[in-house]
Length: 280
Image 1 (cartoon, rainbow, N blue to C red):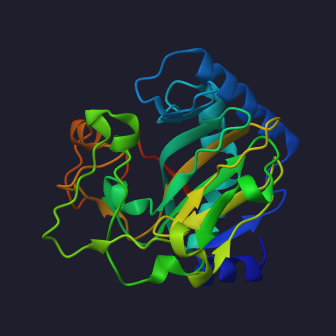
Image 2: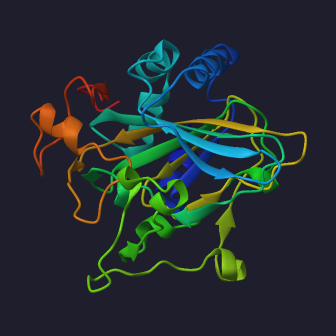
């Protein structure tokens, strides 16, 4: 990474790092994805199924039973990339997520933020969106530039309405201090929207408070397979949210002895990178 890329991440909230991972790491994730899709998963959800049999599938927290995912999480450069972009003293892994769209699917992920759904709270967070197939610009993830620094709390999309699963419900109280989510898609000209065509080995890293959405509009002969990892920096603490969480880590955190307000850690959320004593 260059200083300019680190500065862009801080100012814009997102940076696309070209060729950050070599072909070997891409192949590791492809094998892991094939393995994960071949067996059942408690967290797997079908977000959308169209009249032609096309599907949009989401899965998460699979690194604990997919060895290729664990290998990537623990041994790839991703933890250091996250740490240096965040300017962190140390970085903990949070969870993985996989998004698979079959060829030609047009389902669009609504614009949203990530961190308000999580069982943690803090600004020093990032998501790393890494496709293992080529992605055209019209099919990629899109970001509202600088939105990670907007000093506003929003009522987010309830993704439980997509899965129709009680475990995914995030329902806000209309009397709280949050405001309705901005209609980015309905007024695109009012926002500076960033997005890139990407190749396997590229990664888009973005602050988890960044407004983002998309990944739809696939060509009839193009599918989409993305491996996503979430990373936590210095100011992040456990936060159990009354409106719900997705994915909800409450049970796992409590079982691991973590309480609201604690610093994350332990085997489920391992520290995988730490800046050396000289600050390098």
